[in-house]
Image (cartoon, rainbow, N blue to C red; front, side, top):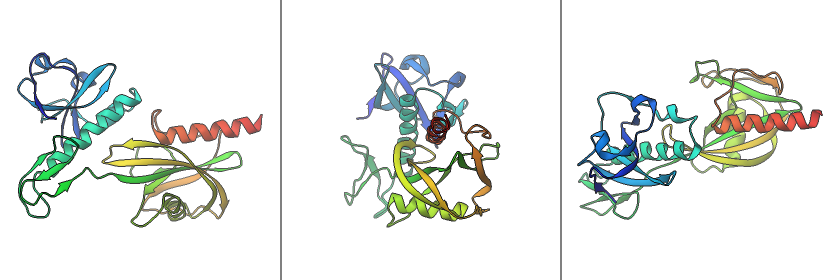
Length: 257
């Protein structure tokens, strides 16, 4: 429920606008609303961290606005709450008017939704399911440099799930489209909310079955098999991609001993 902030309101402050966060001194603000010029602003509690409320305030600040990626190496729960706040702020901003009748909408008081005052249509935040998969061949991993990563990082393959497709079908299709190989023994590992912009990553591990690497140059710059003890620059800790790589490395190392 939306509340009007008073000076004594306290907690962690997700001040967000257009998929950006207010990060004074590079950190999420923490303390009383009066210390951050938030008194009188509409806000809502979207979670709890370290025993205190996490508030969402939809507001543009003139400076120190940054990406939620800057919090990726923080506590996992904090990163996920920050991602939730950014996604909700963008959802509310982009659903001020009904897509069916064009009339003004307002936030629901009981759930994360927008309600149309005219036709009573109800909208919820949309989440795009994605797959991400670590592929192993003997003591090596398939790693690739994506066209959207110009920092030299090599990572596992990933992609969006298409309409009418299972997660398993999406893995097989994405791997074939991006690398030209077939996989087998697919197994689910974990999932991770990923607010770039509104995704849910479903992580898998698989084994190489057949084929030679032929990359999709629209998606990848390079791809190859890398021995577990001789890896290129990897994604940062805290990402599901890094976990998949580390889990695969651990399996390879255990079998080599």
